[in-house]
Amino acid sequence: MQVFDVVVLGAGSAGEWVAGGIADQGGSVALLEKLRVGGECPYVACIPSKAMLRSAQARAQARHLDRLGGASAAPGLDPDRLAFAAAVRRRDELSHGRDDRGAAGSIVRRGVSLVRGAGRIAGPGVIVSGASEIGYRDLVVATGSGPVIPSLDGLDTVPAWTSDQALSAAECPASLLVLGGGAVGCELAQAYAGFGVPVTLVESAGQLAGHQDARIAADLAAVLRGSGVDVRLGVSVTRLAATASRSARALLSDGTAVEAARVILAVGRAPATAGLGLAAIGVRPGEGGALRVDDHCRVEGQEHVWAAGDVTGIAPYTHGANYQARVVTENLLGGSRAADYRAIPRIVYTEPPLASVGLTEAQAREAGTDVLTATADVAQMARAATDGAADRAAAGRLVLTADRARGVLIGAAAVGPRADDWICEAAVAIRARVPLEVLADVVHPFPTYAQSYEVPLRELARAVRPA
Image 1 (cartoon, rainbow, N blue to C red):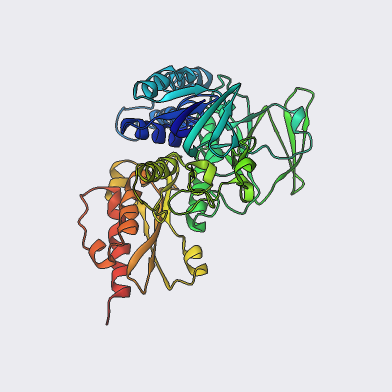
Image 2 (image 1 turned 135 degrees about the horizontal axis):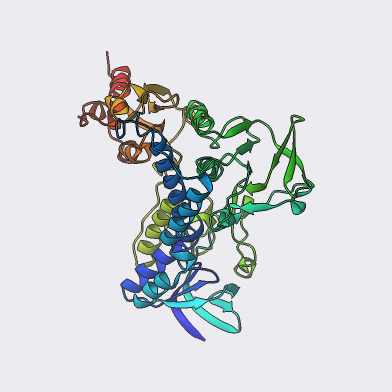
């Protein structure tokens, strides 16, 4: 049995990062992966979804080229289905045709032993993969997550996709029913609607985007409706049935029904811990299957078992996985780094995007914080006028949340053009605990959307300043 310093289960973003980082420092490391090196993000998630969204956005911009002064009249565009096929070709080029040979070759050249197959823990210090046994000093679980398949009567009788399947298929459905109003559901809904597909999005909660600020979530719903998506909030699908034309008919909890050529399941993802043999080392996953970790990303109760990425259920984003991977790598190399999750950005990459970081007002009040909030209308920014965004119904807003007693920013949320970029200013402020007085004195270039911060920050700074 070959014994390694580190064995990593899962070659997604976190696992690839840890394995490469250990190998770069001369450690022996084995990386086990049954699907693709790089995980889902490059092939069936982040990259293909953003590629399709960009193609849809480019098409929408072209329709209004005359309004932006780029033409004297709106240009003619080819039919939606031809454009969709072109977008799929671009998507597949950017995602390397879902072929991981480049990523696999790169990680092997860094000195990592790549094992193509699943791994199961046989006992302390031992992994079984196929007929082989692999030994380890430290084990890193980075197996990611998988789509939640809802328990719905009739689901097995209708044409349905998970998000992974939708982002690897070439088919442009005649119509869509999207179940779930989280980031994935919202992004897919807008992408397909951008190519003329009638889309209905059903979310059982009273708002989109989970526990985001309610005002920002309402803005996101307006964005989707402005894109042509039929957004149904506070209702759920109670039953599905196939129609005579092999479409899906969904009966909703409010008594209405929706028919669609295909259903997309986007009700969430669950940590992938089943079948790992965790019981063999005394580890029991927490609620929903997540591995409980301490602030060093060490699995609770274990000295030499670590976890990073979606499998922890803490920051289920690629950038969150990479952050935890950095923490794990540093600690495996002898450091003592603790993770700080106060400023992990959360993004929905619609157009315009929703971006947030830190606590919402409701979360802060629930924690007993003396909260101050201030808002800005992004449509009032000069850049919104020059970009042609100011005349759109959902140009957006910024909501800032501050701790009155400490005089610092603790949360920010926005819907607005390029908000996924300028939310980073708030992320730095929250992570570094920059005083509101300092933030209010920051000079932003004119004209930019980042100027949205200036008035609400001055308002917050005045509210915490001693009389």
